[in-house]
Image 1 (cartoon, rainbow, N blue to C red):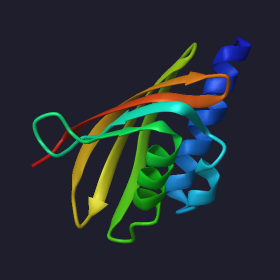
Image 2 (image 1 turned 90 degrees about the vertical axis):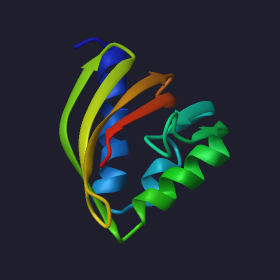
Image 3 (image 1 turned 45 degrees about the vertical axis):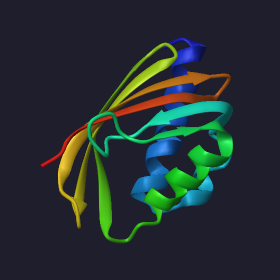
Length: 117
Protein backbone atom coordinates (compact mmCIF):
# COMPACT_ATOMS: atom_id res chain seq x y z
CA UNK A 1 0.00 0.00 0.00
CA UNK A 2 1.45 3.40 -0.93
CA UNK A 3 1.63 6.36 1.45
CA UNK A 4 -1.47 8.07 0.01
CA UNK A 5 -3.52 4.91 0.52
CA UNK A 6 -2.12 4.50 4.04
CA UNK A 7 -3.01 8.12 4.87
CA UNK A 8 -6.49 7.74 3.40
CA UNK A 9 -7.12 4.47 5.22
CA UNK A 10 -5.96 5.98 8.52
CA UNK A 11 -8.18 9.05 8.15
CA UNK A 12 -11.22 6.95 7.20
CA UNK A 13 -10.60 4.54 10.11
CA UNK A 14 -10.54 7.50 12.52
CA UNK A 15 -13.64 9.02 10.89
CA UNK A 16 -15.56 5.76 11.28
CA UNK A 17 -14.35 5.33 14.87
CA UNK A 18 -15.84 8.72 15.78
CA UNK A 19 -19.31 7.41 14.86
CA UNK A 20 -18.87 3.86 16.12
CA UNK A 21 -17.54 5.04 19.51
CA UNK A 22 -19.67 8.20 19.76
CA UNK A 23 -16.42 10.14 20.06
CA UNK A 24 -16.95 13.48 18.27
CA UNK A 25 -13.53 14.74 19.38
CA UNK A 26 -11.95 12.27 16.92
CA UNK A 27 -13.28 14.41 14.05
CA UNK A 28 -11.50 17.64 15.00
CA UNK A 29 -8.24 16.97 13.13
CA UNK A 30 -9.73 15.12 10.14
CA UNK A 31 -11.54 17.89 8.26
CA UNK A 32 -10.02 20.24 5.67
CA UNK A 33 -10.87 23.94 5.72
CA UNK A 34 -12.47 23.57 2.26
CA UNK A 35 -14.35 20.34 3.00
CA UNK A 36 -17.71 19.78 1.30
CA UNK A 37 -20.22 17.22 2.55
CA UNK A 38 -23.42 16.27 0.76
CA UNK A 39 -25.86 14.33 2.94
CA UNK A 40 -28.33 11.58 2.11
CA UNK A 41 -31.39 13.71 2.80
CA UNK A 42 -33.67 15.47 2.45
CA UNK A 43 -34.73 14.47 -1.05
CA UNK A 44 -33.95 15.07 -3.79
CA UNK A 45 -30.35 16.26 -3.36
CA UNK A 46 -29.57 16.13 0.36
CA UNK A 47 -28.14 18.84 2.56
CA UNK A 48 -24.74 20.43 1.88
CA UNK A 49 -22.23 21.45 4.51
CA UNK A 50 -19.27 23.54 3.38
CA UNK A 51 -16.09 24.38 5.23
CA UNK A 52 -14.49 23.09 8.38
CA UNK A 53 -16.97 24.55 10.88
CA UNK A 54 -20.16 23.29 9.17
CA UNK A 55 -18.75 19.82 8.49
CA UNK A 56 -17.38 19.46 12.03
CA UNK A 57 -20.62 20.63 13.65
CA UNK A 58 -22.75 18.41 11.42
CA UNK A 59 -20.68 15.28 11.87
CA UNK A 60 -20.27 15.83 15.60
CA UNK A 61 -24.04 16.14 15.87
CA UNK A 62 -24.50 12.83 14.07
CA UNK A 63 -21.79 11.14 16.11
CA UNK A 64 -23.50 12.10 19.38
CA UNK A 65 -27.11 11.48 18.29
CA UNK A 66 -28.18 8.72 20.68
CA UNK A 67 -31.33 7.95 18.67
CA UNK A 68 -29.30 6.39 15.85
CA UNK A 69 -26.39 3.98 15.53
CA UNK A 70 -23.92 3.75 12.64
CA UNK A 71 -22.47 0.43 11.55
CA UNK A 72 -19.70 0.27 8.96
CA UNK A 73 -20.31 -2.65 6.61
CA UNK A 74 -17.26 -2.27 4.35
CA UNK A 75 -14.54 0.19 3.36
CA UNK A 76 -12.61 0.30 0.08
CA UNK A 77 -9.61 2.63 -0.28
CA UNK A 78 -7.95 3.55 -3.56
CA UNK A 79 -5.35 6.31 -3.43
CA UNK A 80 -6.94 9.48 -2.09
CA UNK A 81 -10.47 8.05 -2.33
CA UNK A 82 -12.55 5.76 -0.15
CA UNK A 83 -15.99 4.22 -0.30
CA UNK A 84 -17.67 3.56 3.05
CA UNK A 85 -20.73 1.29 2.99
CA UNK A 86 -22.74 1.77 6.20
CA UNK A 87 -26.03 1.12 7.94
CA UNK A 88 -28.02 3.36 10.30
CA UNK A 89 -30.34 1.79 12.86
CA UNK A 90 -32.53 3.25 15.59
CA UNK A 91 -34.99 6.09 15.03
CA UNK A 92 -34.12 5.73 11.33
CA UNK A 93 -33.18 2.53 9.52
CA UNK A 94 -31.43 2.63 6.17
CA UNK A 95 -28.23 1.79 4.32
CA UNK A 96 -25.92 3.99 2.34
CA UNK A 97 -22.48 4.82 1.05
CA UNK A 98 -20.14 7.75 1.44
CA UNK A 99 -17.74 8.59 -1.36
CA UNK A 100 -14.81 10.20 0.42
CA UNK A 101 -11.75 12.11 -0.80
CA UNK A 102 -8.73 12.84 1.39
CA UNK A 103 -5.95 15.38 0.77
CA UNK A 104 -3.00 15.96 3.10
CA UNK A 105 -4.57 13.68 5.74
CA UNK A 106 -7.81 15.71 5.81
CA UNK A 107 -11.27 14.95 4.42
CA UNK A 108 -12.01 17.34 1.56
CA UNK A 109 -15.15 15.69 0.18
CA UNK A 110 -17.84 13.37 1.50
CA UNK A 111 -20.76 12.57 -0.78
CA UNK A 112 -23.49 10.56 0.96
CA UNK A 113 -26.05 8.40 -0.82
CA UNK A 114 -28.69 6.38 1.01
CA UNK A 115 -31.43 3.83 0.52
CA UNK A 116 -33.98 5.72 2.55
CA UNK A 117 -37.50 4.40 3.09
